[in-house]
Length: 193
Image (cartoon, rainbow, N blue to C red; front, top):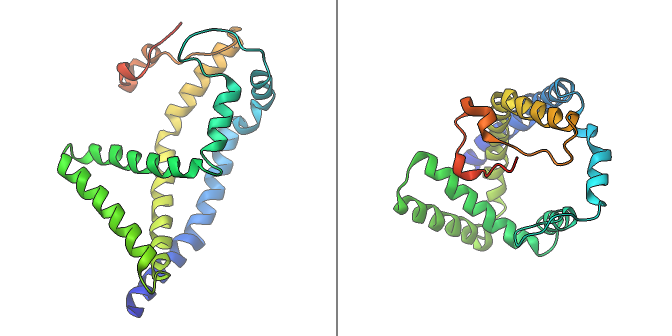
């Protein structure tokens, strides 16, 4: 067991040390500069929309305040239970990229329950962290590569959002027909222009 922990410890040091942290900083600065400080650019608009009186009706209408409270509730307190359920659901959705097999979804569910049970009951449950730390580092690197590959698409969408704001639209709306080359699932979006 010590041998395996040593291997995972080296992988953890590698991913969380010299490779991941500089990669995070460089990409963060790059994304910030290329997107023209998008993280800070819409703060004023965010508060204006948040405190604006509600307009519009409908059974599926969600106000800005309701969306904020649901978002905060999902990250703090009892919302964490729903967060775990969402994570399992997202994992299942990601699994469908590789296979449509219902059996594989059941195998994944059982594996998740087994890992949680093992982590909760094993006498040396702290060994779980020796496995999770390096795997989270590798996952972070993979996600950073994916973000880098998706960045041009995100910039196109941000440009469309800014263009709609410049045209005077109070609530910009995503229209998948404006991005026909992106192979967007039309059933997932209902344009309301």
